[in-house]
Length: 108
Image 1 (cartoon, rainbow, N blue to C red):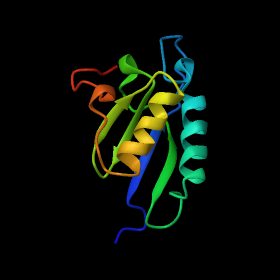
Image 2 (image 1 turned 30 degrees about the vertical axis):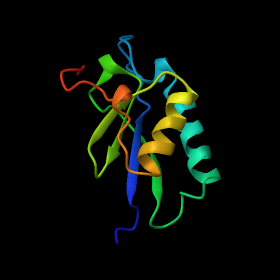
Image 3 (image 1 turned 90 degrees about the horizontal axis):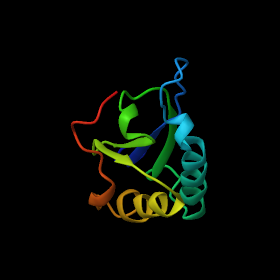
Image 4 (image 1 turned 60 degrees about the vertical axis):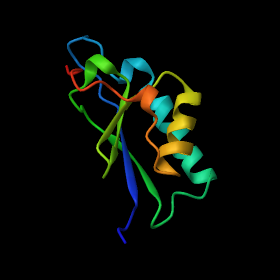
């Protein structure tokens, strides 16, 4: 068994150029909510889920974004209910939340 079953990385990058970025789209609030929810559900233990901060993930046009590994599933989200759905379905039960999956053609 892996030390953590899944990792979710939240882009918290803010672009200095003034171009849109995840930080400007509420990424910190999404990260904070996810971390609390994972902890409250008892998933933050060894063998569970690790919620990580990340710098730029080069998917700015879809921001805010998060990626779940080892599944390599990229998500975009709008609010806490989207984060809750990702936690409850994917991080807890391994089911991809198709409606929030970021299209492969979205980049910088």
